[in-house]
Image 1 (cartoon, rainbow, N blue to C red):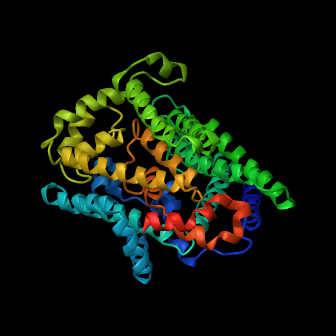
Image 2: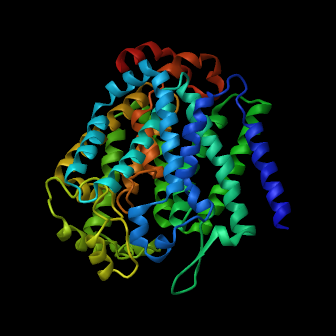
Image 3: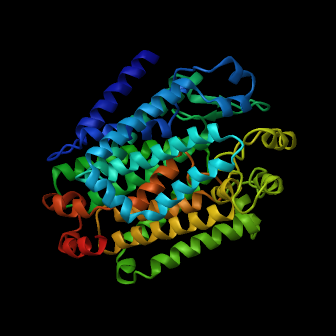
Length: 468
């Protein structure tokens, strides 16, 4: 039965990829490099797929955090090297994008400089290379001659591959698609990912992209192709919702609901007529999340959605982490906090052995201090301005990118995903801050029916002048 299910899964993936293929243009072959990177970041590393792990790592998780895996290092270094080579061939476009996103470059440079005061500079440098790889892969997407096509193809490949595979592993290969609680024996569903929260995160990101495609197909003129696209996206959305139900990841599900609401509001006429409502929505979401999750206002809301008011001991962990900082101004160094004796002290307090702060903003403070927090704030403000500018000029996919930005900020209140190497939320947040569809406004005029608001083409020259 498992072999038959596997064969049907392969046929389904092939059918979805073929049916949703681009009718007029094909994405650049270079897009396969960031696609592979996104797939590994959204599922499992190569060593996890091959179940390769050193004997020392199997004995000690802290050793695993320091040593890593040689197979993964080879794969990731190879992808980064190929990605850099692609960007060299796109030198002019790459430099233009970097000049428009100086705050992100400054933050990455500061992360590299922070290795000079890190006690584990060699380990942190390897992680910095992966973080640089995140930026390289996003640059390949946004520097494409047709960034809109690249973006659409990227999310389609992720959805058509990872969702059916997750269902296959959960149903027919439980050794790979399920986990069991250490003490309770409770079943958790992980699919192609390494845990239930990771599966929820995957569903959240792909689900928002599917909602985006579904809405644009719905608004397209009536045709046979439109009906087929609606049926296709509804089928993909049903897989997302089913996996959400199995994963039982409340953070990701809550962010997905908020993201859908924000996306529909951003796409509404009321938001277009009153653009100042958008920053009000962003500020309102931040205030609500801060009040409920950090300050502890209205704990009954968390209980109503099945969430522990202590956020599964997160608040207690936060109180443990801050006193262990060595320097609140510059931090412990990039990705260096959760290493060595400090980690042993944390694990001596918390039996479930946390390896992250479960708060992206606190994570930056622990690693990079107040200087890092200030630089992060400049990055987020810069990214918000770019995302809103794209949306105001009705650039293609700008509503989705602005939604990803809002969801990324909300997600980091209870999870660590800011400048977190190979974290899918960080990847799409970085994509939302650097995505510049100006070229797609010019090159996709013939494809207005499927993807562009006609007004976007009218505003193309104006948009080009503002983004220069």
